[in-house]
Length: 232
Image 1: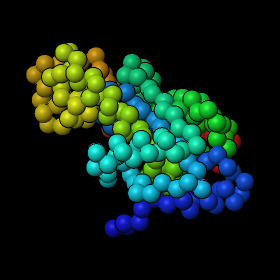
Image 2 (image 1 turned 30 degrees about the vertical axis):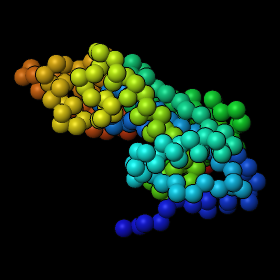
Image 3 (image 1 turned 135 degrees about the horizontal axis):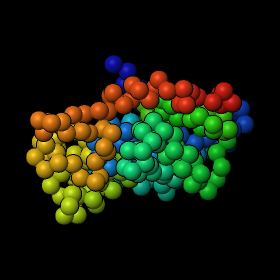
Image 4 (image 1 turned 90 degrees about the horizontal axis):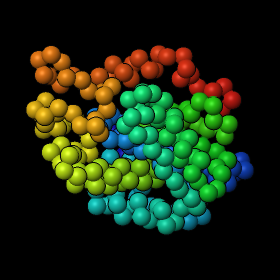
């Protein structure tokens, strides 16, 4: 098992090539059954390093929140982009991932000159980019984006769980993901408007049917999602 934590190696290499505003991007909530998809975009300073960054899923919630605040205060720039549940239902999760990536990039005050993206290549994006598999465990910029996206989305789901119409689903504990209790509640009471219709269906026997992997496989095969040849 590779225990190496994210570092500044890629960012420093790109800075040596003249890229001074390298942005890391990552998403949170892709596999959730309910709630929006959140993408964060972060431009870190290579001169003012932030330590103890990692894949947000490997960091305790309390520490993750502190790191999120530290990243926001020390980063050269950061922003989030969101795709809503109605958008996910209409366009599918992959298109909405790209949509949220673009929204996060466009919300930055400083225009990045290079993008480091966790796993994906963003179609039609003119800024040079590099997709990195498990990038949140390799690049500090992607790791920082992972943390901000996760904290932002968790806080949003906690807020939604306080509303009477959503309280029974326990979004403050499951954050919209398919835990056993969450699935049982969907079966007992039916889904809410916050649930993704193309991720969940109730069959004739009132059993919860999960469509996520089927939807994902279909979208990966659609030609409209092929990466742009203009990006690197």
